[in-house]
Image 1 (cartoon, rainbow, N blue to C red):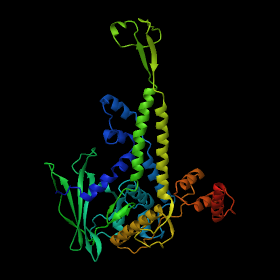
Image 2 (image 1 turned 90 degrees about the vertical axis):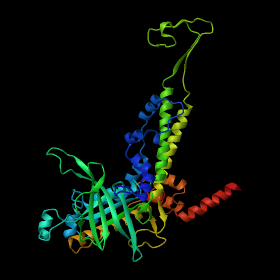
Image 3 (image 1 turned 45 degrees about the vertical axis):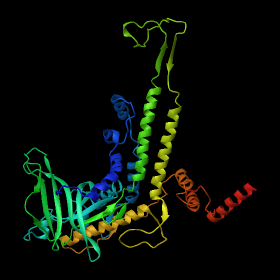
Image 4 (image 1 turned 90 degrees about the horizontal axis):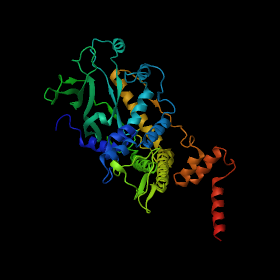
Length: 458
C-alpha cells in the first residue's frame, strides 16, 4: 500500500455517509449520479430515462435537517470566555483565513453532522526561526492557528495505547496547494499528502506529491517539529468509538431517497397524463404519412367504416393523487425524524468534559454542543501551548436554546401523536403558548382523560 491508500476505516465511514453527502450537494449532483439513486425501469429507453432524470427535482430534507440543527447550536456565537489577551485576538482570525472562532466552529460542526458523524480540528503553526521574536512572528502571521478538516480530506491514521489511552501516531491529510512552478497569471494547484508521524516523542512532517511517472514520492526533506503530539481533535456527532462514527442523518437520507424516486415517478406520470394519445380506429387512408397523424387546427378526418372511431386516451389521474399523498407522508416522516434528533429525552451526555448527572433532561444536540465545546477547548489549549502563552481556553457554547420553542403548535402536536414527547410536555408547551390556562395540571388532565375513556367504554 502506498501513502495515497485510503484506510479501510475512512473508506467504510465515507461509504456509509455517501447518500447523506450526495443529497446535501443538491439536485444537479443527484441527477449526475444517475442510476445510483434513480433506477432505470425495465424496457425504458435511454432517451426516456434521461428525460425522466432531467425533469426530477430534489426536496433536500437532509440539508434542511442539518441546517436547522446547526442553527440551534449557533443561535448565539461561540466565543472565548476570556475576552482579553493574546488567545482572544487569535480567535478573531482563528484559521488565518478570516474566520472567527464561531464561524470556524459552525463549519466544522456542519462537516460532522452533514456527513459521516465526525470531522477534525487540527492545531498547527508555520515554522519559525529562533531569531524571530514573538512580536515579529505575530506581524508576519507566524503564529498558531486552527485547521478544520472533513473526513473527505483525511487519508488515514494510526494510533496505539499509551498509559491505557489511545494516542495518534500517524495522520495523513490530502490537501491542495499552489504550484510553485506556475506562471504569473496561473492559478494552478497540485495535490499533496501531508504525513504527520509521532516518533520518539516528537512529530515529524513529510510531504508527498506525484512525480512525472504519476507515482507518489516524498517532496522535500523530513521536517521535524517541537510538537510532542499530533494536534488533531475529533468533532463527533455520531461517535461509535475512538476516531470512528456513523452518519447521524442516515435515516433521514433513506427517506429523502424514497422521496426522490417517488417524485420522479409522479412527474413522469403527470407528464403522461397531460399528454393524451389520439386513438383512431378504421379511419380513412392517411396518405403518405402512413400511421403518423399531425393533429392541428384546420385538419379533418374521414371515416372508412361504420365502426370507425376516434378518441383521446389518457390516464385517469388516480395514480398521481396516490403519489402526491405518498410524497407528503414521506415529508412528514422526515420532519418527525428530524424532530426526534432535537427532542428532549432522558440520558447522560457522552461529552469528554464535565459529565451531566444521570437523569437530567438533555437533548441530542445539547450533547453534540458539549462535544464541540470540548474539542474546541482542547484545540485552543494546543494553540496556547504552541504559542508559549498562558490562557484560559474555556469556550461558551450556548445550550440554552428552545428545543420546542420555535416550532408551531401543530408540529408539537405531531411529536406528541408520534410518541416523541410526553403528554406532560405537550400540555406545558400548550400552556407556554397560551393555548391552555396556566392552572391546568398535566397529572390531573391525565386522570380525567383516563376516567373519560372508562366512562365511554361503559
